[in-house]
Amino acid sequence: MKRIALLPDGTVSHEAALYLFDEEPVELVHYKQISDVFLSTANGETDYSVIPIENTIEGSVSLHMDWLVHEVDIPMQAEWVYPSIQNLVGRREEAESSEGKPDWSKVTKVISHPVAMAQCLQFIRSHMPQAELEHVGSTSEAIETVKNNPGKGWLAIGTLLGARRHGLDVLAEKVTDHDNNFTRFILIGPSKPKVLKTSGEDKTSILVTLPSDFPGALHQVLSAFSWRKLNLSRIESRPTKKKLGSYYFYIDVLHSLDSVLLPAAIAEIEALGCQVRILGSYLSYSYENTMTEVQN
Image 1 (cartoon, rainbow, N blue to C red):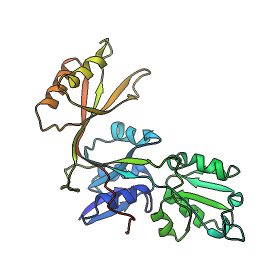
Image 2 (image 1 turned 90 degrees about the vertical axis):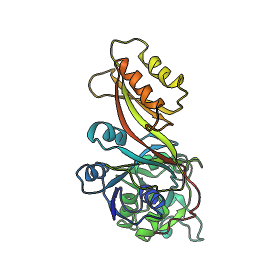
Image 3 (image 1 turned 135 degrees about the vertical axis):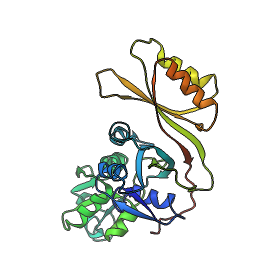
Image 4 (image 1 turned 90 degrees about the horizontal axis):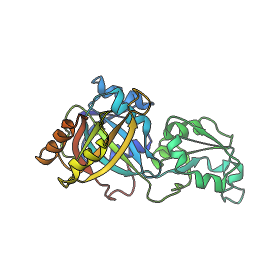
């Protein structure tokens, strides 16, 4: 049985892993910090890691991108998208009036992961502007903190799964500011997993570092893809951390390495003096709403 590293029990990462492996028996190994998730697979303690890498609202998760690029060398083996549905979690008696209606004025603090918190700021500012906002390492940790501090008027933003795990009430469902809030997850590991879903789209992720003395190098790089009609779904610049003004470009190509065109484009880019690192060539799975609720 494969061992899968991921963030704590009850997080969106947990829900997303249950969705991806819904027909595959695996052992889920939870870690509090994303660094431990990466290192467990890097050190061979687990077979794969589940990493949230991009969100509809907040964009790239910079810390996770940096770990993927600078700290470990583990190939991407799959990608999938999962809805990030956040809910207000706590004790009903601490946020309701005597008539059983929501009384958000009783809330003194809202706790969550910073990304989840940012996804719900409009709701918080509209309904409980008086509440202190506190960031913790995961939505699951936020719910556990609220559970361990009764009677203080504290609420957490987190998942339905997390609320169930800790025996707390869901006071308001789907409090994210936008309905189309999805998170892109990647599965990293040393080997290809077996097919996880019925169909997927070929994708390859690469890093390109431009030569410092080549004016127009980025245009030349993009031209190598353009004239071959290779579609790019993402291009993002990130600092190399070597010197100020030095960047690499993270590029997603909707094509497999098992072809003629993409390897030829990479060879052309390298001939320009660019450094190219392949992060992975894998299947990308779109979310299919076949599960109304995560059961595990």
